[in-house]
Amino acid sequence: MSGAAQRSKNDLACTPIIRAGQKEWFLNLHKQVAEGKPYVFSEAYVPHEILEAFDLPYVINEWWSGLVAARRQSAYYFNDLEQRGFHSGLERYTALAYATVADDRNPDPPWGGLPKPLFTTFAISAGRPQNIPRWEQLSKLWGVPCMPIECPMTGRPMAAHWWDVSRRGWESIYQTYHLDYMTENFKEFIKFCEDMTGTRLDMEKLREAVDRGNQQQKYFEEIRDAMRNHKSTLTMNEQLGNVMTIQWRRGSEWALNMAKMFRDEVLERVRNEQWVCPNEQVRLLWLGRGMWQNTSFYRAFEESHGAVFVRSMYMSIAIDGYPRYGRDPVRALAARYCGLGLLNLDWDIYDAKAHRVAGVVAAADNVTGRQRTAFENAGLPLLALNVDLVDSRTYDEQALHNQMTEYLEKTLGVPRLN
Image 1: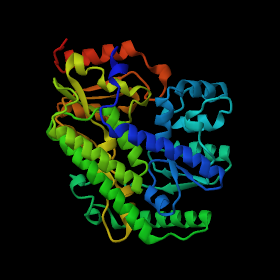
Image 2: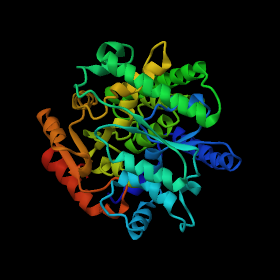
Image 3: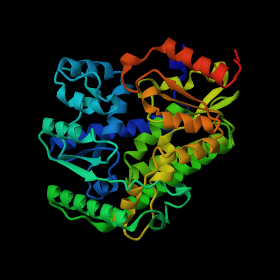
Image 4: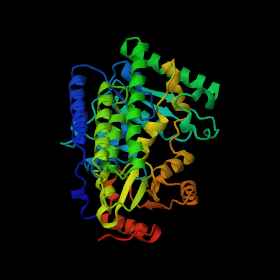
């Protein structure tokens, strides 16, 4: 772990280009908002292609939380929240946006802080009831409308091997009444956007945004195929950062161009056999959301044990869960949220084996007993780390080093290289 900071450097030339492009976009957004141009603050589980078709820039809550944590400012904001009377048990990953907006004392907020949006929007689902008060309070703090989008589940299990069918055959694996209901919900969202912006949706622009999003995921799929079939040419910290940045600009020309650049460089590294860890001994799956407060963690055991993290949900759900092809772009988007597939254990285990991983690592609060049992029954021991993904106050480097070393050497039987 002592070499983690040094090993967190970028291997890909495209990574600083992608990050600089996103930062430039965000700083320009500040200027545009000051000049009266609206933007939207949104959750990840929202059809962003609709906002793209309205020319409404949007900032994603999950991306923002990752950025705050990566800038090592999460401890400051969580301390500030507790001083304001909020309890310490707030779900850390989702509390940072409120904390940064509520704070008026930090002289150096991340990238200048969040400007006031035109409105906020989020998804309501049965498994995430805490979303409602959180988004209501954030919207109240800004003094802007809040547009919830209901995404109810049917309670039925996902279709077997849904990832092979859902892109084009979604009418066959989702119930018609569910597709109809979600389509109407998205039409209500479109009507809300029309009322807020005073413009009508151009259906052809929406179709183009969906098409660009589908093509973007094809580029990601070529990267994943390379990761499955060769030694790793892509570090987990760059995979997480690049995929998340590109994915949350999904549907834009910029995102499509960046995804192609990303794909081209990874495949070139495969052709040149530029491996992340030439002495690769064991491949690992990172389960759940990223370790944004210290992504150098993912490279800390390459030299000592030849341990490489190769699979994360961010790239795989983008590839298998997001693409939808159909003549009606609204209904195609509705099909995505009828069954995104995130956290589906059959898919997780299939993808783990396709990546040839030997074990699974996650933050403890991302792990359920059902997940642990399923992975271990599949021959994939699971390590739950005692750390919060964004709260730097919980990060104990020596404790994590000890947990990982014991897991690699005793649980997985990986010999030390040096």
